[in-house]
Image (tube, rainbow, N blue to C red; front, side):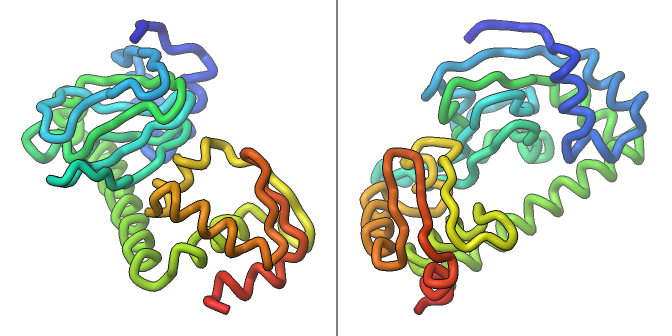
Amino acid sequence: MRALRLTANDRTMLLGSRFFVRLPRSTGEAILEDVTVSTHEEHDLVFHQGENIDEVFWVLSGLIRLYRVGKDGREADLAILPMGEMFAESAMFLGSRATANAEAAEASIIARLDSRMLRNLAVSDPDVAQAFINLLCHRAEITEDILAQDRLLTGIERVASYILSQCPEGSTNFSFRLPFQKNVLAGKLGLAPAGLSRAFSALRQAGVTVSGRTIEIRDRHVLEQFQCGG
């Protein structure tokens, strides 16, 4: 891990992110004065589940993976966080205890801030408290969506839905490059890597071709049948 300073571009990005955008600019800029920055190589662990942490974090670049480990050693991905996302905010209100493991899914840069200072600010400043409420409600909505997806969609349907979510409006044939490794996509969709491979194989009949991290779709209308369980 290497310590850095927050750049002007970092400040602009953070002030436009979900948490800061709801704050008066002067409040956001004041908070950022106390931020530190660190770099992390792929697979670096930022913190362990159950660990006492006194910081909150934002992703400046790269991807951060949040996951839990079961008693049998299996890992369950909870979230893959891209640039601008805040994490470990829940620990501020849960006795500073991390609710999951946080790992750099690829080389990443993160911003860090003393959580005790931010928690005290939330008590004294209604704008900061409201920003936290909005953020936590957003997190709850995402959790509900993931739970519903896990209960309602098969692995193949989840993969088809993800591919279709990348389809440009009005396009029938399209291709795109995954923004992360396929094992990261598997975790994001709640699948084992082998399950993702099986889903890609099953989707070949829908005209889906996978080469490395590039995915090509021949006809989105055929793929939509798999999204709906066809």
